[in-house]
Image 1 (cartoon, rainbow, N blue to C red):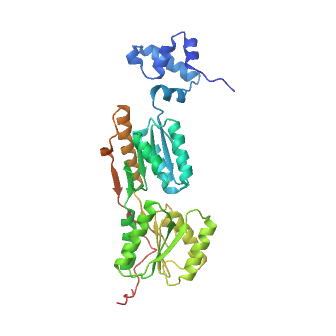
Image 2 (cartoon, helix red, strand yellow):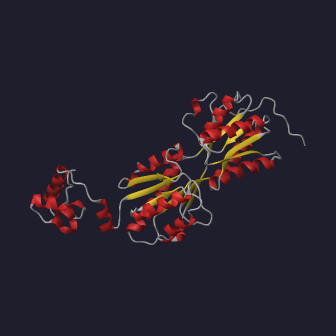
Image 3 (tube, one colour):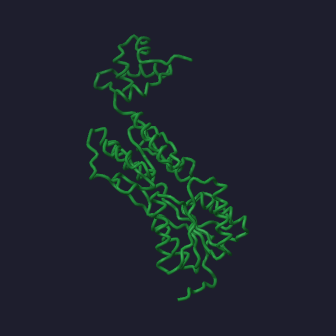
Length: 352
């Protein structure tokens, strides 16, 4: 293996002081009164010999790693992948590298990842928090680590937060179905303590109860394989033939559910109307196209970056990250209307 080029090597080859090379590579030429010619000479030689800085040593020396850690439930999920990409390429974070990991909604794994990133002296964290990590999150806040929580919140934790109004999203979708004449509206969700899932369920229940309808609810364990998950959805719809509309609480539940409905020969929307929480880039290509509760992905990413950058600047200036400065950004979802939930031609009035 080829030996890594060091600052000492560059200094020896150029016949200059190590401190001169260090000042140039750390952009401190002005305070050290190093000429432009010397700066260019050092930089050209460093580039020619393939010099790579020792990031660990650099972070220990400066106290800054220029690394942001991002913890999400599943980086393969289109929602989280899109957010990560927008954050990674955001101009406000152009001088930072983004490292991300999946927690798989496992509190033990999430706690381990938080500790691992802390040990590596990351400058900030972006976290979709897992229930069971409250103490670790609070420790980060107490240590004044720049951090933004997103997608869901943890009760009792006062941190910077970016999320959507999940209650309003499913409430609006349920109201739409009711107004269009549907009476037996199912809600397929995960059996989860996550705040966003709980709020989506409450939004559905609120609309159903307001109109005096009976809830049709299927809660599925998060840890099930897709095969078992599909089996449970199939069993539910086979035994609930009265269901004439369904709201799926997540994108991947919707994709599995649509496959199940097709296997059962259920025609959309003639026999059952469908709405998915979270839009999918291919929903408009489905036959019929699928109505969705869309989250404002770009607004979420922009809000995350702005909140984090504000804290990073405070940290660089050694300013305290006061708890009074915590901001909570709650964005509105959008109901993207397509052909999977039309107005019923002859809506049946509910008996009093």
